[in-house]
Length: 403
Ligand code: ADP
Ligand code: RBF
Ligand code: MG
Image (cartoon, rainbow, N blue to C red; front, side, top):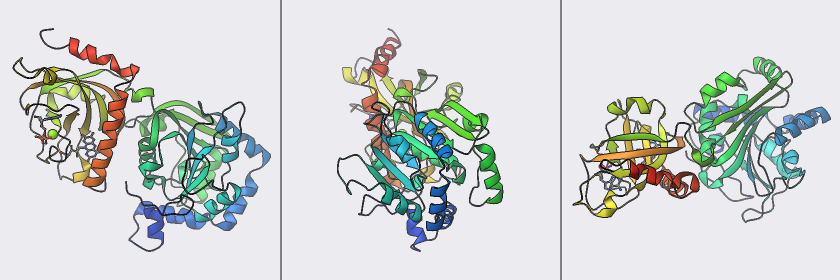
């Protein structure tokens, strides 16, 4: 999750681009990006441009029209934007749905150069919506470029080395209720024959429904539809409204135990750990990742009133890959948004899990992890104030022992 940016039309230099410039040893991910950048050169940009016949253009219009809820206020992420074939269709405005604010991401400088000539950026920075570009791999796109109301992977999904990682990173940048469109205007058979000829350039398939369901099983994405015609492919996914977990509310309870001594408290984010073994059944519905909901500590009346009330919480379930432990144990840990009067090891704690924000990932370091945890806290805090989730506070209180 690292990325850097430099000036000039709001364009950033990603690690992939940095590696291409010989500043560091490229990872396989970066090698794949460099390969794409090399193939999709100036000449290929023109070939691509010329291949957009009126027939193909009509299918691109169908892709853009297939993304629900877009308006002039939407911000769209165009992944693998190429020369910008989809952009006029996102901008076309039947009624008020014309999108103005678009971030076009591509690993190929020649493609983006062409795109920039067709769609001049309004300014480097500033509030005016417009078409901006970012050179690099989607997996390196910095969080400050979001949030987006939709992400489109048009005619690029099979070119991604790690489709799961690309969708994971997209989730980091998408608003709840937003959409992900995976499309190919020429369809699966065309894609497969192109892939057979260029297996290094196109390492992956376009996922059929079952494969797509499997790909997003541990992500906060729901597959809404898959259109798999001989000469047209599009799959629509959505980040649920309010990040709603499909099985919410899920109850987790136990006596607070000691964690792994990483000193979360010193980092400003103490986490009350629950022993995972008794929670096995509930955990089956909770893939490793970050969730939010309500928490209540069941301590006696000698504790301050506020310590005994229902509070907001954000939690992580997983094995903390950032730390690279050899045989990491599963931890279930909740950061409760309340300043308690004292520690509460051994005390009974009840959690009501409502939303699933993102999968657990390996961050580049503690700073990156902490920055994202703070984003997670912000998301949880504001989500729990919404009508969708506020009512569950009373529900948890009503479940207190002795109520
Ligand atoms: P550990 O590694 O033992 O879990 P932490 O540094 O994560 O240690 O601290 C967690 C402990 O801090 C909890 O078990 C609890 O006793 C205490 N604590 C105090 N305030 C909070 C809070 N707001 N949320 C979670 N735990 C808290
Ligand atoms: N650890 C990770 O390695 N990757 C994560 O994505 C991650 N996300 C977290 C999100 C939240 C909201 C919290 C509270 C913790 C998260 N952790 C994650 C766990 C973190 O590594 C753990 O709390 C530290 O080990 C400090 O004890
Ligand atoms: Mg802890």
